Structures are given as C-alpha cells and as structure tokens.
Image 1 (cartoon, rainbow, N blue to C red):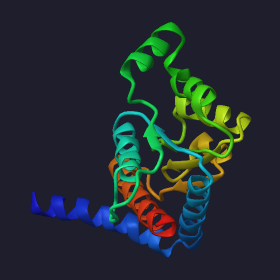
Image 2: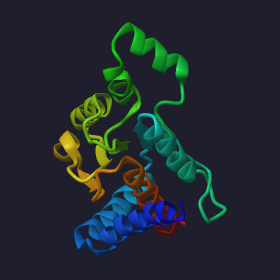
Image 3: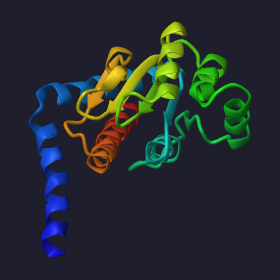
Length: 190
C-alpha cells in the first residue's frame, strides 16, 4: 500500500515538473494573467464552466476571484455558470445538455469578458459549444484540458493542455495553474 501511495504522489509531482519545464506553458500562464487582469480592469467579467469534478474546480476558482485569495480586497466579478440548477436542468431537459453553457454565454456574456472552460479530455460537447458561442460574441476563451487539448485546442485563445492523460493528475494541475493565475491577477490589480 505504501508503494502505491508513493507512486500516486510521484505521478502528480512528475506532471507538475513537466509543466515547470514547459516554457510555453509558463508563458501562457503569464498571458492569461494579463488577459484576465485587463478584462477585469476594464469592467468585464470572468466566467467558468466544467462538468463533474471540473465543475467543482470551476466553482472553486470562481470563488477565489469573487471572494479573496491572499488579499482582503473588493470582490472581482467571477462566477461559475452551472450554479443555477433550475436553469441547468430546464435547458438540459427542454433542449440538450450540450447547450446549457452556450445559451448562458449568449445571454449574459459581453464582448471582452473571459470564459474559462475546464475539460480533461478537451472534448466535452457543452464546453465546446460554449467556446463557439464565446467566439461569436467576442468573449475571450481560456481552456484547461489534458495532454492533447482535444477539440478545445482550436477554440481556446489560451490553452493549458496539462501533459497527462490521467484525469486526477490533470485536475490537480488545473487547480495549481488556476491558483497561480488567481494569485498573480490579484497582485496585478491590487
């Protein structure tokens, strides 16, 4: 059992070390901080979406922005799109689960807002449709995926394709990258 535990921890560390060595990934983290800080400075909003564990991560990251991270500060306008279960279940029932996020992007996002989508495969239909709607509405897109990027790689203005195909390791790195972005954005604004 001890060997297995150590193996899992080492696998998580290895993915993070791969990210640490990836100059492109480090540069994209900086680009996303600039994009998000500029958007928030200009009165735009930050939106998050995901499914399952990625929905929980989306909500977690939105709360870091709208609540606080390190600094006692004013709230930043950030929200996870899946928090209204009446809306989510009505649209999924009446239309399709594939459009639950796209309809919200069409209805509440404004040009210059930033939409962050988390999908370990990069192929979640509802995230893809949301990113397509974002592109039509001049909303910036930041994708968090696994190694291949899936179909999201072509729809993301900035893509964080974590170098792994193992869902738990990908999600652990999504939170790490999200926390870095939040910390640096908070520092840039305040």
